[in-house]
Length: 326
Image (cartoon, rainbow, N blue to C red; front, side, top):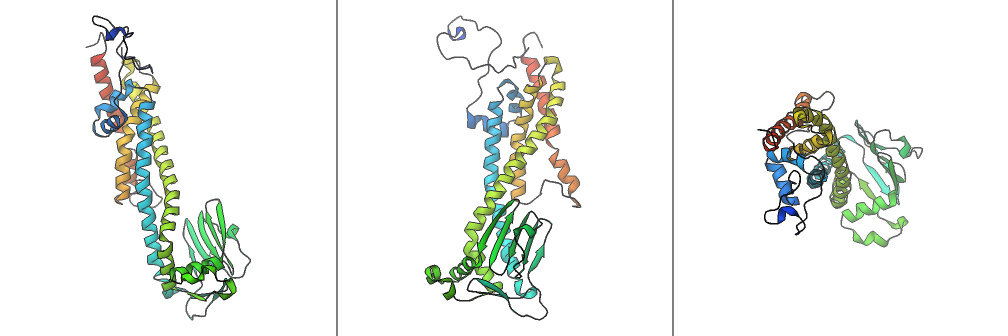
């Protein structure tokens, strides 16, 4: 019967009976896991390593999983953040076709007349952008999880429950800096040159603020990705582990040991999912009304058959190596 306990590694000293000529170690042999990066490589490329993870303490599987989630989340967040900013740049290029131009003068916003065009207002399922110069609205009037409200003298931003207020005088300086007017850094507000807000000035502003925007959005997406991958790994491990335990019931495998195998299976799948999302082959998350929901759900549940296969490998290999079993 294999020893599934989290035993400490055998000491490399003369006090270990197995290290002396002719000595016999008491009990079943203890398994020394490979070093971290070698272990990570084996978990990524060698399915048999998923089954062998049953013989190691859980931390030797959890550590590579957490590491790979962090490694995958960073470039994925940076890539998506850059794409979102690109989308915004393309959108502001179409501003003049639909919306009225605006004027920033001494930190105050005015709407310029433009027949047939409307005041800026965008309302998406998760994001809203609106201009209201009446001065009666604040960030509390933004109803979507993320949004931006421009009033007559303030800019309100909202990211979930976090809100921030910025005076439009500072925004006016950003517009001028984006246009190459660096002399406005120390100019009083009442002497700032006027700025016409249109497609050209908005495009220059986005390009000027691009590094800061990519960093801010990337940090938010990084946290989201970590939570997403951890949640997926946790749910799948919980679903995989009972099946692995049943496949190994003749070895009296406890649930906590089956969870090591379930966690090990998730490591390469996190990498594959991250690559697919990076290259936009699949969102890998079902969304209501989306035609690809079925395929996304199939992929999302892909760890289940792989986990059972790893459980079968563990049953075969551990039975073969257990004393008294053929």
